[in-house]
Amino acid sequence: MLYSIGATNMSKIFRLQTMNKTLFDYKADDGQGETFPNTTIDQLLASTLVERLDPKYVAAFERLTEEEQHRAALYFLPHASGKSILSVTRPRVIKWYCPFADQAVFPSGVRYCINVYTGCEHSCHYCYVQGYSGAKIMDGQAKCKDHFRRQLLKDLADIEKYGVHCTPVHLSNSTEAFGPIEGEFQHSLFVLENILEFRHRFSTVTVLTKNPTMLLQTPYLDTLLALSRFHSSHPRDQYFQDNDLKPLWLEVSLAFWNDKSREILEPGAPNVADRLEAVAQLQQAGVNVALRIDPLFPRDPLSNGKMMGDFELPDLQSHGDLENLVSFCKQHKIRKIIYSPLKITNPRTGGLTVLMRQLKQVYKHLAGDRPLDFRGGSWRLPYEVARSVLLAPLLQLCQEAGIVAKGCKENLLETP
Image 1 (cartoon, one colour):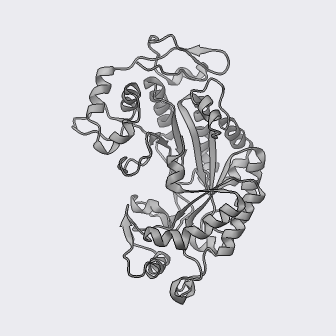
Image 2 (cartoon, helix red, strand yellow):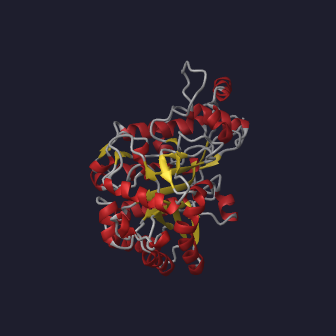
Image 3 (tube, one colour):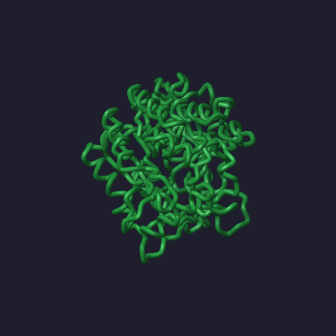
């Protein structure tokens, strides 16, 4: 059986179930010279769970050793279900990243996602969450999850109990982790501090936000900096050193250079100037920051002599805006930009906003004789059109500035 690594701070192990007898001589170091025993697992139950795994997750599990499969199955799959096919529904808040995706098509592998709150204050017209959530995104309401902290600690206890292999974790893909509600409850800070405590169970920590200003506060900044370093005893330390990888990425979403576009498309989000200032300060402080110019919008001039104004829209994200954003990254030594083309997400409730209907008409114009690609609940430009019209100008600017540019999916799949 594969060893499991003990907790980093035994004084807080009251949250964990009592550890069983060691199976191997290997002991994990907590970074302070103290070692902890490994835990046993129920191999029969684990193998039974793996055999009942939903086929769409099989490709992710096949990348693991048999022992890693067993430990992951015990954490992710329900133990007492009467169903013949099991999905990754067992975790409470430290969940499987994108459980809707077929791993054969979207091979994200075994990784965690923690969405601290439900809903979001930003009210972004383009938000993809509208495609699978019944929440009214444009209401700009964020709420706490019931018993969130208790549920988080239970999940951490289970990850430790089952000895799940060191896995990347993403915070927070479907909500803003650092909006106004965080100022009152600080649940996201609680998450970061506990990831730090159980650092040996997590490889890359990726934090996504539109509100980097809050992260300049001392408790947040200190925790981010601590998460940015592995102790030499960390199971992925040598691999990350050998491949020049970063243990933490702060991905700040900023698709606009001017506040007029931000006010139209992200009416509840922080203004552009505040985000730029916070990004510069965080990068200078030693946090690994990537800028997400996401999504990429159609821009003037359009094809066949048309302009955005012909569709009753301003030039929301001009070429000049892209130049300024890339120049800002170069100036502040931000070496990675993440991008993805705009998706016209079909909301589960309420239908498209007027703005998104107008952008859909722009897409139809750009696509010409070809139909829009509808998948994953969203209308998209045909790939060839998106690459030439939306992506190519940004990629050229990044190349000239010596900045790595990665598509959202590519960046995710390359995050170990």
